[in-house]
Length: 525
Image (cartoon, rainbow, N blue to C red):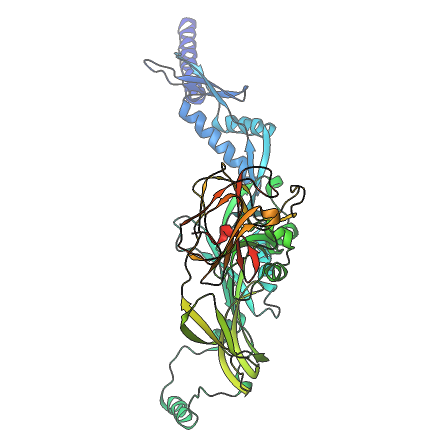
């Protein structure tokens, strides 16, 4: 009986041991990597050189890192930058223990927090032509654009909105300007068409009071008619360091304050360099300096020529139209009488003008502060203007050619710093350095009015031309024509030399209009 009891005890012990092993396998075995026949099946994971745990695959390690980074990002409203260098050390084991993914993720999060290099703030980049500025919020974008608009919309009748740019494939916003009055009218309007009694009354009113184009001045609504930005505005959302974001007041100053900008100006009738400089708030010296084609303040300019001027302009231009009432003295258009026997260089005033007076309602379009277009809506003349009548020639005058072949331009037209002793400080022609004896030709057909010695000119020839101009050829070595002789363009009239007040062999050449020297280079063909 004792033997049997001992045997039962051993069987119970074996069953108990087997049960313990089964429980241990169920509870503990999942923390070990499953056995694989070949390749790494367990990985020691490090982040930025810090051990964070052991996992069963590379995929699990990378997913833990993504989850940790996502968790780090969710804890901040801004974009967090943290270095994350993942290292995996694999091994092929028969049996090994791995960590829970939750633990590894938390360890990774702690490492990432210790390696935060900075944050990127949500911001908005505003691009206007080649200019761009980064602002802290969309509200700042509205403040910037509204401030640019309010310089000309002083009553605050218009508002800026941001809408998706339909011309761009990516998500880019652009500006749209709406009238507050139109928005109110649309909100109050009934979206049903007129019908029945209402439609009949509207038509009856139109028959009794038809719309008339002959309105009185008081019938016109004056003030701002429309307004828009003259430049394309693009706005994109971005994440940037705080150091790259501009405060709103600085941005407003940069965008709205006028800056000097080069522009091309076409010479108009009546323009002089002095008038142009005054109109654009420039000094004559500045105007000459910025134009290579203008040699001095006394240089001749012609209608249709284009020169460079500077005008004040903001980064963001605003284009707007105003309806305005004004009274003014006005000039009638000039009346021209063509004379086919005169050169175009000749004209005479037949009738002097006198100003008239009128009342006007006009729609005037501006770009910033500069008028670009004027359309008169109503005009009432108090008394008529008397037009200026001018008789003018129609024959195009002959061209002028360079009087020598070759030669080096050694002295231009205008003021010179160190003239030869006895010579004027203002050079009234141009000089070409050329050997003594070079053939000198008539620049244009004409009649020789003088040929001989001419004090500082040395031997000199004067030729009068049919268009009223005169040419002079100085410092000659030999004269080949006589006074009263007619010469054709390109005819040989003399040989170059070094006579008179001269420091070397050259030809001095002048063109005179109305008795005054002009820059010959402006008239040579």
